[in-house]
Length: 138
Image (cartoon, rainbow, N blue to C red; front, top):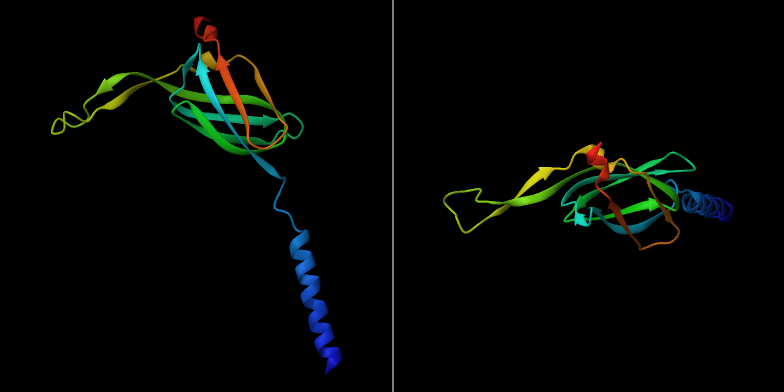
C-alpha cells in the first residue's frame, strides 16, 4: 500500500515538474510609445515590429497617437505603419448636434517609408517614433 502511494506521489511530482518547465514561447516585455508625422500624432492605426534576429513580427494598435503592447527583447525594425489623422470634426447624428466626432483622414503609406528601429532592452520602455513626412513628397 505504501509503495502505491509513493508511486502516485512521484507521478504527481513529475507532472508538476514538467508543467513548470514548459514555456509558452519567448518571454515578452511591456512597451509603450507614440507615433507621429512631422510632430503631429497619428490618431489611429497600427504598427508592426519585426525582430532583427528571428524575423518574428509583433504588432500593436495605435490609438490617440500611442501604442501599448508586449514584445520580445531585442532590436526591432518598425514596419507596416498605417494611420489616420484628425482633420476636423462633424456631427454624426443631426438629432444630437452637441455631440461631435473627429473627422479622420488616412495618412499615405509613403509617409512611413523612413527606416526606423527600436531596441527593447527592458520592460516598460517608452519609444517615440516620429516620421519626418518627407516621404509623401516622393
